[in-house]
Image (cartoon, rainbow, N blue to C red; front, side, top):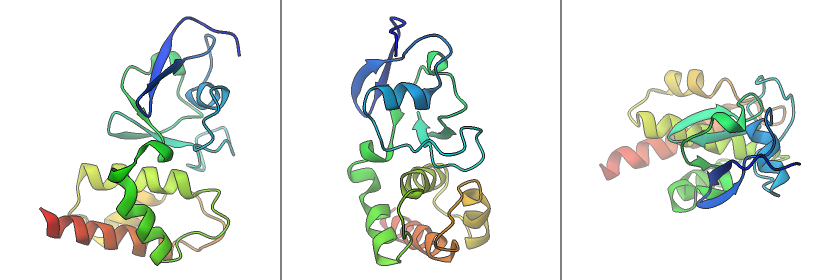
Length: 154
């Protein structure tokens, strides 16, 4: 990928933003970041979800040159996402694992925005992330468990 001179801050590191017109997903992949997955490349599946600031975005539809906030991928969540990763494992919320990074990032954004969500609200908020393996119940169970745990810590 040709350099544009612009940079992004991703998971605490400064990386090239890529050429004009590069999507955030393309810029991340060009730097070797494989956490966000490129599947639909149309903003329909959520596999490429990352945080820009505290907002979940589908990196396949966002131009890298427009990103001004810190980008956090599933790999960069660190301790902030450790409880979600553990809950996904405890609740068997993944099988093939392809969608898991996007699911975890989306769940983190949902809970950062508001931790006191009902199960129905969590279902609605997670609906933009597609999983062909688990049927969603386990994913929602995992997110609900973390929401409950985080509410108790407040």
